Structure formats: structure tokens, C-alpha cells
Length: 232
Image (cartoon, rainbow, N blue to C red; front, side, top):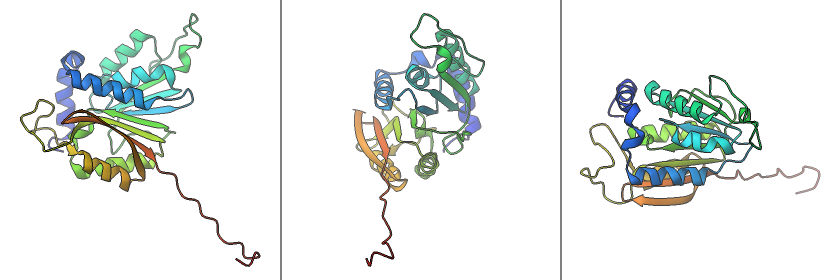
């Protein structure tokens, strides 16, 4: 990480109010793909890391049992909480009923609080992990550590949208700033997922430096010990 978490948090606090309007078409396409591939069921708990202003978390909330958003920027999460309240979705401040709808909104649980990739500050059940345009702040080794931590939460699926290199890195491209960001190659990310026990099931290329990876937990091979009385 080229900047400390505190420096990153302060940087995003400053841009929080204008963040949503400043994003590129590629960023929005990436977010849409993350939402599409996450596809939680009604019983699923989603952990959205680097949740920012809540774009992914709030889009998934109506379909999931619970969405837990984690970020290091209070300014960004304040924006997310405000949007949750505007949508009538439950957040950490409470819930409200939608008597006109087919299901009550108190069944839609959205929570935003501080956490990082390597310390999500969440120890509950997780079925789907999502992240969009956040992990590229970590070094390659830190990304590996983060993916290992996430694997330890035992999600079925991890959908990562981010700045990533499909070819040779171009520091002049608009999708990252070399002084604060540290994107990885798709190969490096794929190796990290595989080492952590995931299998890549989809690779979406949005731009030479932007993509979405879908990683699912590899099934653990179950072997039966020979029966001592069977003669095997």
C-alpha cells in the first residue's frame, strides 16, 4: 500500500460528496457486472468490502437477507447511510416497514461500519463477498493476504471488480494513479484466488485495465477411510 489507511481514508472523505458523479462509464459498467454476478439469494449474507458510497451494497440489499458494508472512510459511509435512508432500507440506525410491498423492508438489513480487506471486523456468516474499485490500493502481497482472510470467512463466491491489468500496464491511463494505487495483473489475482482455494468461474474484461473476476470456492474432495472390517 503506497499510502497509509489513514491517508486513504482522508482522501476519500474529501471526495465523498462528489464521488458518485465523478465515476467513468467503465467504472459503472464494472459495478453493474459485480451486481449481476453477485446475484444473492434471499437467504444470503453479502459482505461488501471497500463499500464506499454503497452502490453495490444498496443494489444487492433487496435480494439478500443481509448486506454488510465495510470501508475505512467515514465520509463515504455517511453517503451510503444517507442513501440507505432515502431508499427506506434498514441500516444501523434502524428499520421501517413497506406495507405496500410484497415483503417488509425490515427483512432487508444493510449495515455500514469500519473495516478493511485484511480486517473486515465481521465474524458472522458470509455467502457472497463483493468489492468494486477498492482492492487496487493494496500491494500484490497485501492482496494475497486479503484474499486469504476472505477465504477464511468461507463464502461461496467472491466477485471482484477492480483496476487490473489484462496486458502491459500503462501508467498514463486514467483508471489509476501510480502515486496512490497499485493494481495487479489478472494473472497475479488469479494465482491468489487459486492459492486461497477458489476457482475462477468468470473473467469479464471491461477495459485493458478494468475487469471483473468471479471466484467460487473449490469443492473439497471428500475421501473415505477404508473400513477396517471390510478387508480393503
